[in-house]
Amino acid sequence: NTAGTTIFGGVVGGGTALTSVTTDSAGTAQINGGAVTTTGAQTYNEAVTLGANTTLTSTGGGNITLASTVDGAFDLVVNTSGTGTFGGAVGGTSALVSVTTDATGTTAINGGSVKTTGSQTYNDDVVLGADATLTSTSNGDIIFNGLVDGGFNLTVNTAGGTFFNAVVGGGTALTSVTTDAPGTTDINGGAVT
Image 1: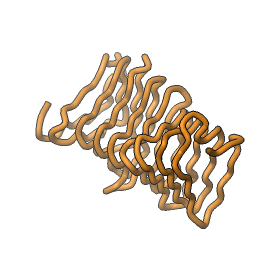
Image 2: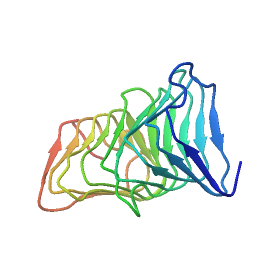
Image 3: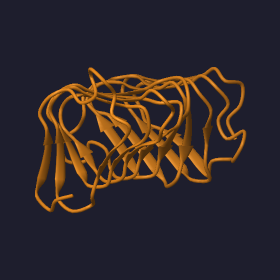
Image 4: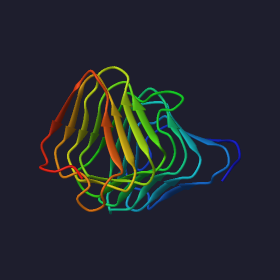
């Protein structure tokens, strides 16, 4: 808890995983050590800046919540069988290199936008909590390997490939789906609703 900056300068939980990590909503957090591992939840209530390629892992299925913005020109990996939540804009000030989620659990995109220079790979189910624009500025692929649901608009902008590899809107129909040009879109999941 601080209105200043919380800095994780080394690996967190690399030897023995912490039970949980929580930061307050005042100030900022810098994750510079490459990895944070907990058995339970991770809740970053303040703006987060990545200072290195970063993997956030909950080994026990705890929720990983990035409640505010996330910035930094590095790779971000979120691994949990719980819910990974992007509560603010991701890469809005400084685009991430890539975003990857694992195949278990759910990703909630509630912050309106995710911007990377490279790829975005959502291996788990995605639920939109707001209108969402996903952008790769350097032709990275944007890949949905799980279901996509949520009664909001989804816009995907990349000159690379957009891949819907599972049903879109099968649980809760999206309001709209828009992809830009150039680039390609592969619909492999059987239905978009």
